Length: 261
Image 1 (cartoon, rainbow, N blue to C red):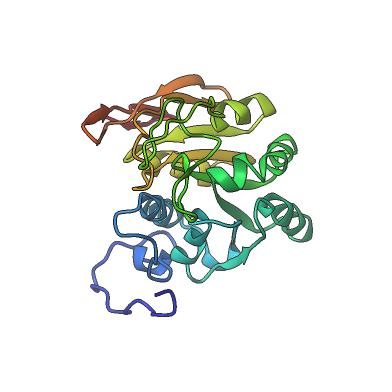
Image 2: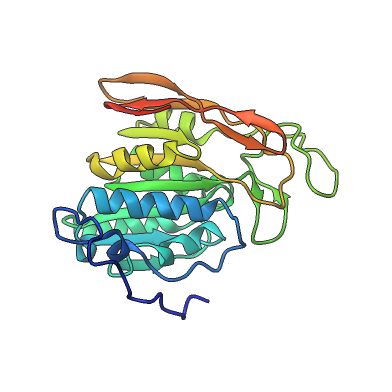
């Protein structure tokens, strides 16, 4: 449970960043998500990105909405500030926090339901205003916390555990962020997440990352090929390699000198 602190035991020769901190210093509470949930891999990528960029924990603010994804902020950089908002309203809290203190660094974690349904308007205006934050969607195409309803990003034809198929076309949050003028926007799966979040954390301005994850209640998430955009670099395909229920996905992300094969 989250009230159970992780043991402070660490190897004395763990690698240290420019601040003299180890990766353990960027971890948070124990995850209470289901075993094997893809959201935890996003947490691991965030720990790696914050450690590699040598972010001072006291200068970081973590924000979230409601849902399984929004529990992520408790699981990384335990020494940072944090705020859990009401459903779909994380961007408003981020806007107010930015207005109060622009010297801090902001990371907002949301889900496809929290952002693309009830919070869609808030998301659009946060991107339009180029809010100083990294906006992350942990996107699995399903309402995992309420056990399996399709979200607004579910693939057309996706089949749920109970057998019904999704008949509504999905919203592509990366393309939406690009059209609204996000400083940097990316979709990423598996190993590409570390690269994508590393670039997002170190790039000034309003940055957006759509992290595709897998949820057991959604039996049909099989493909996610989208677009990445960096000013001065231009669009590039993001393809990932991952086997989901017998189907192979490939991703090859090349961003600002980073390369994931």
